Length: 165
Image (cartoon, rainbow, N blue to C red; front, side):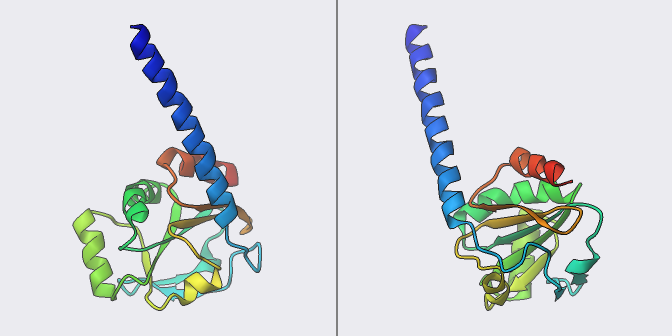
């Protein structure tokens, strides 16, 4: 029993250290935005649905930059899917192929969130993205509340969305 408690303690300490390191890396890689408010953008999803970022009012909005080739993005995608069922979510697939290729990826994984195709990386550049995944959470007043670089759990995302409200 003592041996099991020793292992549990070591695992807990390792988990805390990893968590601290990941948060420091996220903070250091955080993009510097030119503005603290949602930019005026008119976009079209991979399914040809028009989206205006200015239409998202009164509730927090999550904007998630990801890529089909990014391992951490693939792990986090189910968290984004879960959040998209109850919150305003827009995802932007960067350098991930054609609309058709992205739609095939989304369908194969069973996801339903809206995806903007940023095949040339212009939106990623506009948001100063250098690492994937990167997530921005804007509050109900359209001002940035959180930015995260790297994997974030469903609970972490939901807590940030609640806090942004």
